[in-house]
Amino acid sequence: AMAMMIDKRHVCANFVAHCGIPISLADNCRRIVAKSTVPVDVPVDVPVDPSSRISRSFLSALVCHLICHLICIAFSGASRSIIRQSSNVQGETRIMTISLQGKTAIVTGAGRGIGRGVAHVFADEGANVLVVNRSEAAGQKVVDEITAKGGKAVLCLGDVKSKADMENMAAACMESFGAIDILCMNAGIYPQALLGDMSEEMWDDVLDTNLKGILFGTQACIPQMKKQKSGRIVVVSSITGPQVGWPGLCHYMASKGGANAFIRGASLELAKYNITVNGVSPGSIMTEGLQELGGEALEEVRQIIPAGYIGDPEDIAYALLYFASDQARYVTGQILVVDGGQILPESPAAMADA
Image (cartoon, rainbow, N blue to C red; front, side, top):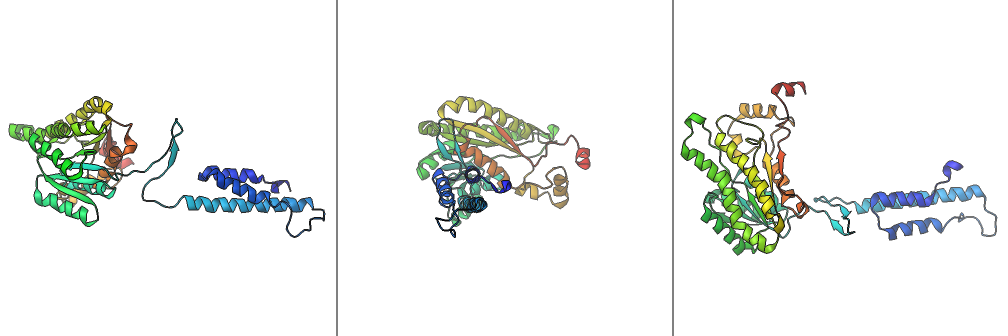
């Protein structure tokens, strides 16, 4: 009998706390139990057997248990966005939704590879996207893909190493969408040459595109972001340079090391304007350039990745999505490595023993 003596209020409270059910609903659950402590089939003037009272209370608690459980299921319906209610120290309740609804984003180098993936993901999450690319055909194809899905995208031809092109880019974004909320500096090149064969022109072209382009793009967009008193600048860096090396890519590695330094310096200067600057360092990603290596080379790349597969452009895009969102308002000057664990093994032997 003692095992059956369940506190009905304790049962309800546990489910209410677990499910986040409003207190008003919890009160209703308690009333359901409180209204029936006497078995319905016993006349009022007949003495009640205490064991019947316990049994009735137990059954009522179970009913409350089931009701709370059903309400919990109703309140936790599936959603494509991650939604959670939380309270900050001031008692303000906010809904956590990773969304760019109503925002405007510029994505450079958006005609292929990671840039194309970023443009698609940002548009899928509600952003108006300015697709910036040197090739009109490749850029327009991405615009057409986005608009075919119901998204909003406009093409802007431009080369990031041209200061004039970057200023035109910012103007085109304002003309098309009326705001610049997000700047994604993704455009980059990586022609291979060993040090003895690397020309000054090649070095300058890589540094101008991969590093100076970030400067020009940022300079073009920060006046509007300052005016808006908000902005998100996200940079696509690389593990090659800051974390690992590859023969024939000294110029590329130098540019990505510089990009990471730029992120930290710019974040300090722009934080007071509510503008954040962050970056993502991709590992091996299945872009058009990597696909051109062929099956055997791709298998060699896959074997050095602890996750066991080569990432997709969307894997980088979703990391950038967080940095571009309102939820990342307190994050700045950070570079996130997204590489399936590629930089972790000390040597290929470590992978063999894993």
